[in-house]
Image (cartoon, rainbow over all chains, first blue to last red; front, side, top):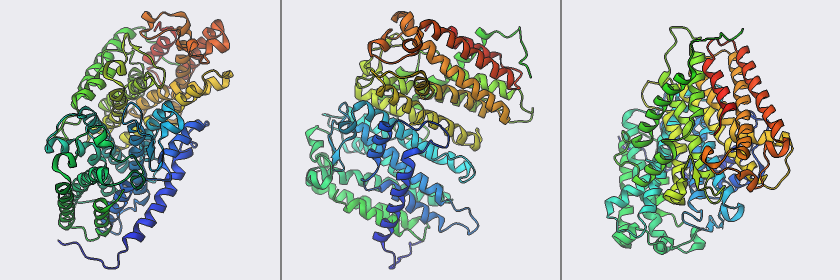
Length: 317
Length: 317
């Protein structure tokens, strides 16, 4: 089945609307999340650092992927299916919390030792290393808090499935594992297959999980899930290829983080292995794979997912 | 209702049997947990550090609390209730993974900068700071992986409830929040209420959650849950009071970690606020509160929970 070409779809407006909702939700949830359950709020310093790490910055690619996948899938669902809009929004914010925590820890002196992120001083520069460490830890826990609200607003099967997808994407066989390979690979010559494996874990796992978490809030057929998993894998890898390209072609002001740091740290990248031109071609191929997966998915409303694939490949920061 | 005094109950044998099961399970789960889902295992260094942090050491107090609470509650359940033994074991190991990750991060140079833990070099001394940071992060994620197995071995309502309890106990309104207060309180004079609040979060939240997670695998009445929550709160605080006492009365070899470090770091403790004698009395009072809560719980088989309360107060390390 082909995707329907919807000429009326305004991707910019779609993004703007959803970004607004995501920012509002993060602002509300990374705050006094625990107040209904505890009589002492989290200590001020820790909460400030958590909010600093999460709010007012970032492309919110992962939340947008969650919401785009949820919309595509839920528009195929029976009109009597439960509306899991709130679950999708929680899933969207949870992926961003995991991403934000990984950046906080990744920037620390014992890791990349970076002082600039999203154009601002990194969390450990602003709040000290100990608070940065704890803020990252607390953000990871908060992601799972968001996915497991009390009451009956969100079916428990959905809660369990979202925690299942997110924990596997974040852990030693996902993001944290990819970062460990990244660390161990400094100064080594990886081949392309090894580089792809590293990035599949380090960046790809959470991007793909974002798509699958959105789908999990909508109710999907196996065929749809498999196609969306392919879409997620392709854009996950494309994201990293483009990251490697931007690291050598963009300046720090545009990136909002330190440019040229991969070469500086002697890290293997797509550009160092394939060269710049072949890396650009590869990003285009992965984009085409993502589009083909959507076309085969049986989903009729994939405009936002298509727009996000474009954004991943065409971005300048 | 009074607890039944069971003279045949052998607490030592109970502990030995359950410790064996917990060690075997941790050994199996902190390993290739992800292999069914991924074609690349987690990188060797990361897995070694995770296993080093978790295996062959520790009192396993949190897992034992989970299993004791589960047994007490499930023995009151209807014979037709589902047997959630596997869920309880997963919950037991998940609490230990959260505890282990917190120790890894807490020992790092930017936090307590400790080189000795359970009689061995700390994780960052052995594997480097970057791997220690990632190992802690991955252990937290693994805790939630354990709680959300695929298939129908564990009811999704139980999975969601366990993730709910654990994430709240670990995050900014629980353990991580307590550690942030601890950091911020160095050199300050806290009063006893403030010290109690700090420890309620830092240590108490996860100990109490262990009890409640065990109960959640067994099916409880509201009255039982409230009594178990009181028991968990009392032993959680008693644990910390005893910790503070041992910090000044025991030597490093007995503790398996550096003795006297609270005073060295100018941290407020029960001993520094109440004095040694009053701290010992307070630990006994908390023990009595825990026993009273069990007596009021309506549970008839609380021998293991009683034994664990004794262990918390009588321990020498």
